[in-house]
Image 1 (cartoon, helix red, strand yellow):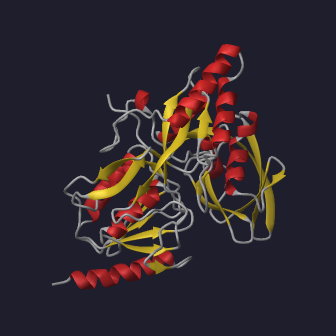
Image 2 (tube, rainbow, N blue to C red):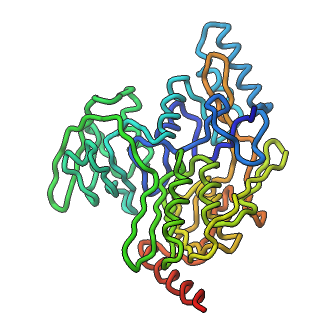
Image 3 (cartoon, rainbow, N blue to C red):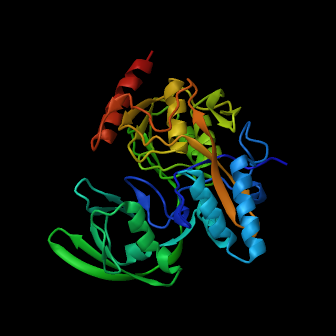
Length: 392
């Protein structure tokens, strides 16, 4: 039986934080960061990722959980203390219920109000997307509205991760049907709305097509099935004016889905290497991808983990021009293991490198062309140049 897949997502030691944590500019309120389920979830491992996820650190955490279980205390809290002592900044411990909820989120299901937001340079929280049919849409909230408060707590200047946690009601274990009151602003108008949280489903991939224009594929996270959706969009775009793969604000997700996405634009070959406790392993693209259509990848400081892995592969292999801002720089690999009592620990076991051998952790990926708010326009300009060069 194949073992757990490597995890590639941003996470800190905090119970339940992984259910809400999507770093940087754009976050779907209540969506998960993305991760790889363990072997018990029945998911296939990527190339070279077989073998058990048992390390010295995993053994220490498991021992602490077992001792707590025997003493009648909380194995989750004991595991968290052991993880904190390890100094592993990306580790996380889940209770069985939290991990089940997290796996639901990987399937594109989550509890929330259906809006995406980002923090502006001045600290304001701005709504960037409202999901159709969601409580936020029904309340008349629009893209560009300012989110000022959640249940009476002001959100200006707060990290978006905290705002997402407030919207979900994590501190009070709020679920579908519970109320959340939002303070909003639009221009000079201030108002408030009380919404009921709902069980929602969301597509992490959106595709925009217009006659004579490049296809824009926006990926918010690498959840289950996202790689195939990207591949299908790439096939439909073949022979056209090019593709913009927008990974801005993508905090990572399932490594296997990122590899599938790479396969859409590569004809086999290396995607990344990574180590598990010193043992080198590799991820390879499948053959048959579109290697001819001009391709630009958009990135920013919120592009992390599996999204950086994909960006690095396409850049190193000379397949894409990368436009935007330096990426976050999260290149560590986590793997999950079941603990006594049914909880799950995710601990760092190594780091990945791009095909040329570049380390990403703490460094990020430098774009070929720097751009900020005009990134999409710059991408279209670049595609025009690439298209001209491919003419006979």
